Length: 310
Image (cartoon, rainbow, N blue to C red; front, side, top):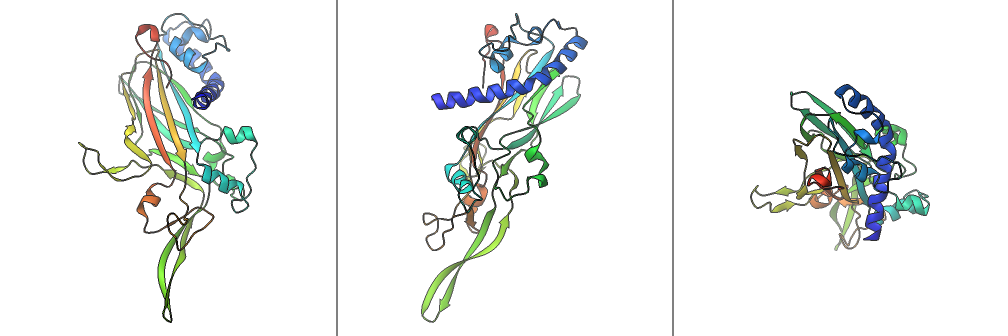
């Protein structure tokens, strides 16, 4: 539990550090809406201050629930599968070099859009992107994927009144697959009286962003999973309706970035030391990217019956 808590604390600190630019924008918005602008803290909900600065390091003390804004904060609490990381650090994977601190801080690089709809019908959107840009095969040209290297964006502030905050399903959630993944087809070859099974390379998927998919289920009532993919619908939420002024909408993503490997455990005849799968293995294909939980919730001032933190 200590390790998990440290990861959450690190994520909050990174979000807090990047929030300074947004807070200056919030000051200007607050001034336009008639909010007090005596200090950064004076325009912020106490729950928001406790969320991004629980130790009070920045001195963002405030009194009372602020009216006039809703904040959005993304927390990337993902991890990297050990088999994937070991491959990247191996000679076959390019001998990726990471310090112990870098290794501990690795997060899947993810991006998605949130739409904010106001009570008057107007709408704005935010593209959130965060995660480790260094987590990629060393031979891959990172310049070919602009979203891999650009600055993180994990927060936003909007004026009230907000009718809803919703994950844009048209784009859903993209995760960066940091390695080449090879697809193979197996077939039997008859040589004389001897039959052997061989695996033939069909295609290779370059490192790229990949859309995460919900599990496929048979009906809306029982949610019996028929194909396991990246996200269980039971551990996925995407919408907040009528968040109160002064509240914080938190978007929290957890889980493990992973890719398939053809080993003796999956296919005895053909094994490879690099990411790979058989074209007939629909579960392996559906699971490329890993397994995640995604939660959108609203945090309010605990003095008024709300909760703090994702």
